[in-house]
Image 1 (tube, rainbow, N blue to C red):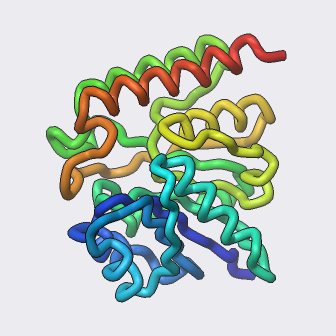
Image 2 (cartoon, rainbow, N blue to C red):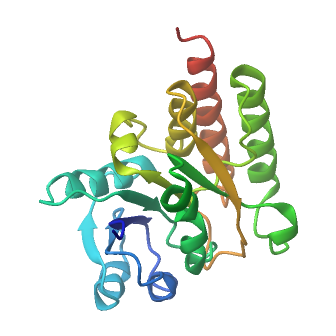
Length: 231
């Protein structure tokens, strides 16, 4: 039986890239939900023209957008088997979604993170704060939780029932690390799949600014230390 796969894409002013992202998503996906996170350009129009279900979330924040997508999915009469999270900036390769979900479909793995490994990254596609932040966060997860994660990559797939059990709550920059920490705490089976990564279209809303990078770093470390000392 074919798995029902839904893709959630948070998007803020991604009119130049969202069409390319949607066109590259494999046909095995049943529905793509684009959440316009207070966009002021034509992101919503372009997403709709390319077949996406388009939602609006006026509260700015990656987590707010993801939660809006999950709220929508909860209203559907038939729940999905797998949820994939993907950015709308075309930095990931959406066609690799088949590789991302394969461990879930073929090996019954609970959670898969697309790892942006060095040899598959385009020069300049990750800033120094991103690279350092990933290294620090995953090193701390290894130290505290014996994790084997090497990346906080946003391109990820998870069984829908497992996602619901995480009771995700972060509204902004801590969404990805919260998911990984809670998956570790609940002893989910997980793997990383090496992914290609390229320079995004447009300017990053997080790593592209000093303020964004600092807030993201604080949020990520906050989640790690919170769970390190939580019984």
